[in-house]
Image (tube, rainbow, N blue to C red; front, side, top):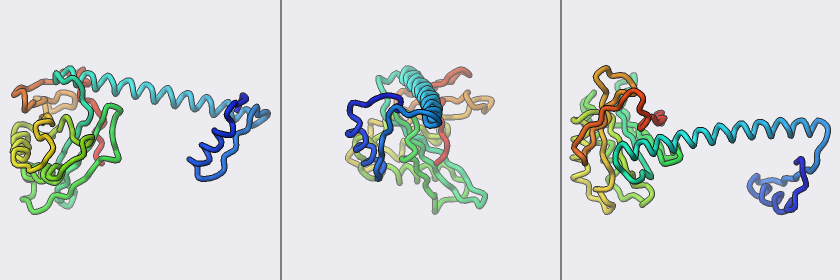
Length: 216
């Protein structure tokens, strides 16, 4: 450290507990150690600035999405996509976000079985049943479920939710289909809002759903 700490021993104890080994804090370091300390401070400030900028952008995107959907707040979103491997195996991916960004620990991948190859409708039905047929903890219930696909996929998703036998509120999630735009270009998607029975054609400069949807 480049300064004296009033609670040095308490901080050493806390850091030692977190690290699982003894941690000591050196105060008023000089020479090469001082240079390394200055470099560490510069790197830490740069990393903090990057984190703050990313957090600010995520907050702006969340607010834009709330405004777009006329929702007061969104705590959790889950996004589903169907893909096919080289061996024609059908796989469904679930990507999860909260107000702070991606929840990668909650990402899930589901192997789809017992369907006709290429039947994405049946695949979507199966993954939604697997994901939501059990009770969920309150903080795990999504406010929005994005379905990658148009009206056909969205209707299949709605049918699944109509037949689910779960205790949690099935009316809570907003099911939204994400269909490709006319030119099928990223950023020109059409949102199909099930509860509001309307479509939203996103403009090129819209970042309301511009989240990192990297597959798990």
